[in-house]
Image 1 (tube, rainbow, N blue to C red):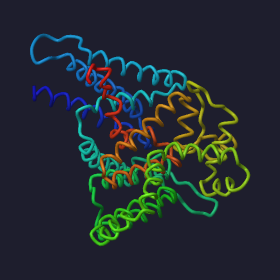
Image 2: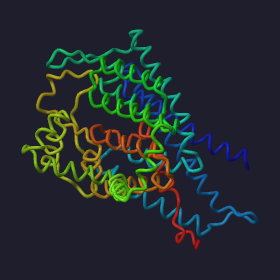
Image 3: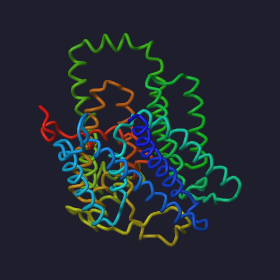
Image 4: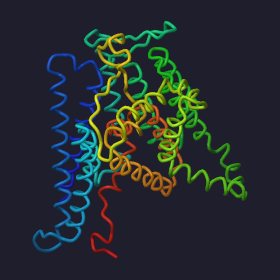
Length: 411
């Protein structure tokens, strides 16, 4: 049985790592080299098949008993019903949007049953670093082009082998999150200074301001957490104060419902735009508020989703040829709503709220902080459902594959 358990785990790791590597390379200029683009697409679908086999194997084990042959137990039926419901909602979103991303996310999350979340972070981290190093080497070698973009202030932005400069900094931010998730208790001052140096270097090359600021916040907070022994006593004394307990309840509510509050904030800003303060925030967020409001007016909000032809910068594209056709929405929450509809977006928000509650109950405040940082990043970057980057989604996987007690016949 242990040998079979190892084989089941191997199916997940093959599926996940194949998806991670293939999807990462699809964000690079390697897709312009020969048949590489088609090979990467086939690799992603192979990962889908392997993950599907893992899900079927896990489900089949629900019908096994200590004695006797396999039978269709109530647990197996309950699990199948839940999976069918989830698959139905996701398939509706996929068909209406003509985008398979939600299906890949669902299958990989369900396939992670029995795999420790910390192991996913621990194994994905060196693999992703090696992939990025490989891309940088090919760029320095001249095999992959280093696309450059020129800002109005004459700042030159390097893509470093990827399709757009911000992609590199976004990957660096998520790698930071993965590493800090494993650290648990913060980092030393020396490690923080070294990471800040790398961050500044990447910012100098890419001029990706939002990713730079988010990365700096993560590093600085982790440095503070690393000095916990110096302020833990003061924090304990403050927590005994009545006003602090009230404040903690308010903060907990804001933390658990952060994703919902961000959606409400975005909706309010779009409604106010072009009035203040929406116009000021729109400038700070590089026109994201205007583009979201424009997309809502042009395409509307659908119950099941909509197939939209997004036009954005990136890859071997001449900025001058895009002009007024540019319509891409960077905010993950609005992009999910426009692409996949109200029902799927509601499911995602419910999952994020439950994940926030789950992390809070586990009591690891470092994980809670990193979860908030990921939600903040997804407000300005379309990375919420990109499971090869947003590994925090795997912490929500038990919510998907665990069946309610009443459905399994347990009290």
